Image (tube, rainbow, N blue to C red):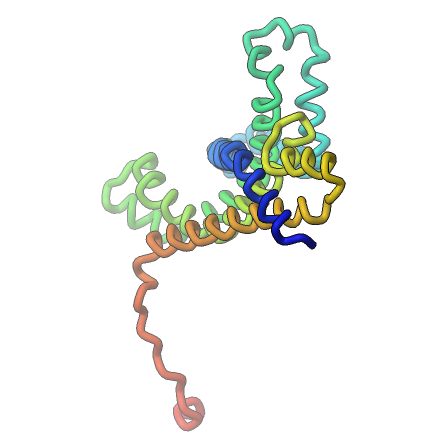
Length: 241
């Protein structure tokens, strides 16, 4: 590998970083909001809502992301009703098609992670909130949601990293993100190994910063775990007694 060439390629890939970050951040935020709605539907007592949410999760998680991007980008344009609708100015653009596919894909996984966080809230905490006179909406906002976020954040951080890497598929619909620029340089220079080593370094740096940010948020959300004194291990005599 030619290190000067890799460094030069790395500089050429930097213009694609904003698009990669924009796709990742937008899809993660929209997917989390949609996933919260799907998770609440899964936990509702209305059977039609529960059945729809269950079917949505099963179908979306079973379809590969690449297939979904192609279905949205190439498939929606086949319907005359969509081409004549107010959504067409957005759906004919590669960026919005990629963002829609990424959002739908991550929402299914996010809903299961959020549902696990919601189920982790103990019954005693809810009863204490109701005993204090809190309404159901206030209890959800002040008790259930913060606890669920704190419990789901470690698992959801993996989904965030996966979405950063999944944005590389957007290059297949003509978007010039980091991978799109890397593929263009590789086709011009015929040095794919060096080019994609540089692209991998960019994704490594992005995900490293993302994991540090998630750890900081997790630290801020768990003040009760900071500086917890470590109790000494019991001796053999104390264990036997």
